[in-house]
Length: 584
Image (cartoon, rainbow, N blue to C red):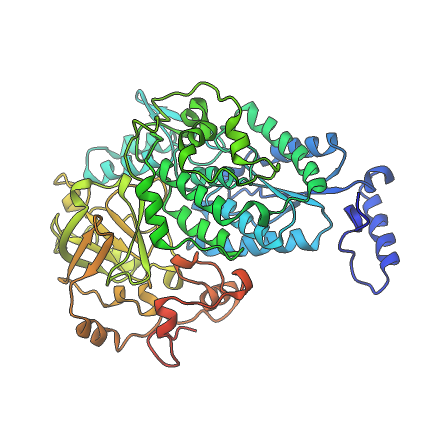
């Protein structure tokens, strides 16, 4: 053990007298009924996130107990502490607005409280990225433990799992093929156990990315929430956290440019959530790492989709776990991976993959030679409508729409969308392009509104997919020919704000572009009178609006990125006092 303070002697409260601070702290710690012998041990913090507004975290008490058991068995003192908890469907306007708040809470509590290492327990969509962002900035030895995915339910002989199936059934309900009685039955059969969504949505994608980065123990990403092995993994994570105190391996040594590229490879092979791009960008940005769009697309074009899960395929996360999980997937991707990256155990990826693998279900995890798709599931777009970029999930879209040109049908915001999308008099045809403005980070906190519903009159006529474009996000469980994360967003004066009904828009996945076919001079004329939305007057929402960056920069706060890196995007370059991008 080194001479530096450890355990309860770390970060003493500042009274101007260190010995008194130590005496007072130990005195108060004794009031918890902890023996002097245990108080002298190293301390492992356990960041716990239970909440009655977070269904994904219902197993949190069991996980905290199991981690604590592992910490005690390895000779350290576990200390659980709460942070913000983000239940995806229970937050208004969107959980994305509060991801950065949770990241700040996590970072500050890690640094402010006396601990030598920390286990981060979370699962729900924005929770894992928030914890990894906070851990990267705090840079104390840390391990991510996820709560695990739900198991599936049953409905009339069909397996169901949140939330791809909820979207499919809701689309059929809107189209009139599922009645009110059946949709009420489905409501109670989609989410039947504790845990995160049962498909390769954002929560599952981020669990796999945490393991690919090396921040979670091998083989722990996909264990179902209600499986006994989830508790075994929790205990092992507690033991590993104690080992970290000795090795002092920090997040900045694990999350590197190479491990981030490995995580992008995994994202492509999973055909994972588009949200993961924003989150991984934010995590990497805390350490000054940036993967350019050109490199992102190169990785996508080189990396096949190998995992056959919903929303792209047929399986569920419990199938992925039983099929071999992340270990099997990484072995298939081995020729494309940086094998010299190291995980929280100090093990290289090559050493992990050299170990014997188990049985693999090839119906779920396909061999490299027989992929679900020869190219990755996601691509970055550019073009005159998205000068700073946009995202398209080609694996979940209708291929016939990859090369499209159509007439814009524009919705100026979420209320306008809600009010008019099902109007029988809406002027819309199946080959039109639906455009949603003012749903980006500044305008609305960037909700999962990019999955614009098919107008009811078209849905009832049998239309299953249309090109849809917005500055919003969509759920990782969603599907369709949807252009997302358009940057700059409409609310800061990006070209998206200039789109009008009847404009022509061209989408080309082949060229990785989305273009507004309007003369630049006309676009400039339309934007000349742009006025940003009013600024919130106080509180966290005002802080969010003043400092949140655009999607290509991770939607993080500008003052939390590595060394306060200056904004370099299109909308920042054009910002000027009184000008159309002067939102602050």
